[in-house]
Image 1 (cartoon, rainbow, N blue to C red):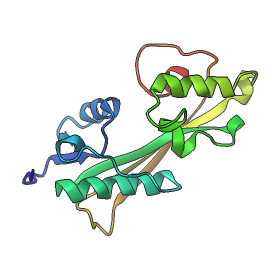
Image 2 (image 1 turned 60 degrees about the vertical axis):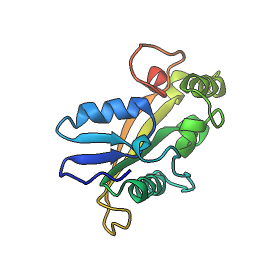
Image 3 (image 1 turned 45 degrees about the vertical axis):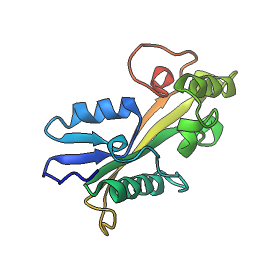
Image 4 (image 1 turned 180 degrees about the vertical axis):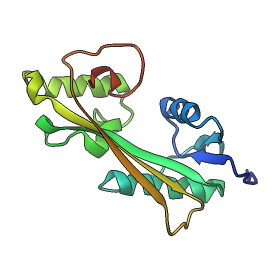
Length: 165
């Protein structure tokens, strides 16, 4: 399927429904098209950094959609776990694991660690490219400092949101 680009169409290189909803809400002036409209497979995350993985995802989606692409790679880095789960955050409890599985593994590994030593940061890298071979991708990185709670709380969000404070 080939869609002719308009200035406001951007493919989101994700099949994560939570991310799709958040990006659509953050960018209401753009037509955000999930990559699933072009491809079912996600890019292999073979990079060793969030930036490398975000670029891999963006180029993969752009090759199939022929449209501008916004991609991200993000994760949680916990100091008491030497930065884990890091780039493996989405599959921390194994490939195909649910958000709850990942949270449960994280809490199990932090069992016995006091709150003051549960420092962590959520890291997000966003990449915007105009086409698959874009030589000058726009790359932005942000971090949010916090701590890992002892138990999940709240009903909003996804991923590690219920235990990151």
